[in-house]
Image 1 (cartoon, rainbow, N blue to C red):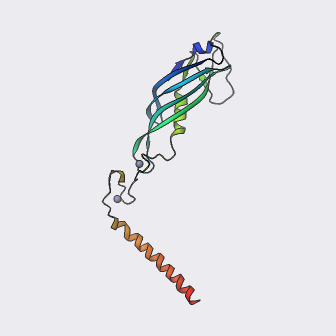
Image 2 (image 1 turned 120 degrees about the vertical axis):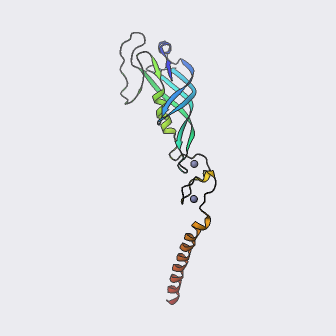
Image 3 (image 1 turned 90 degrees about the horizontal axis):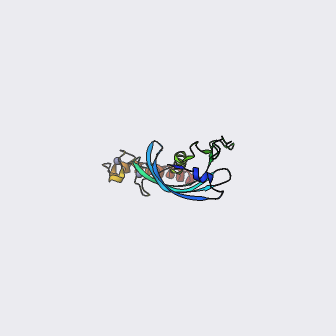
Length: 181
Ligand SMILES: [Zn+2]
Ligand SMILES: [Zn+2]
């Protein structure tokens, strides 16, 4: 995910180039194929990169705990600052922004770190393998996406009916008390 921008650093401000990029990036402990287009624009102090990249990361479904490939679209917009002047080779002062992205001494932009950061932000907080994921049986832990489990409905229902009886009974007591008043 590297582009040599030495030509563009020498070009006039406002000059734009489009690149197709693809490569493997390590996101959240797994290797992901990343593909897309990046537009690079020369500014008075940097190269502004704008692009839309597509990737897929393996995440754990928050309902059934199964692993699945979650597609991500990354809308990247970042400024890359040269650390060396392309003509003179002199060191350049970087802006006082912590963690700002740089163009290395060989005039190469490496998008790996930006992609990693954008991908981590794009992963949903509660990923679902599919919208109607059936989840796990609360009794035996069986993944209900693979079909029903052996826990028969009769096994879980009595608890609920006992609970209903209790509620009904306490209601009855309340009603009785009210009646005597
Ligand atoms: Zn799931
Ligand atoms: Zn079960």
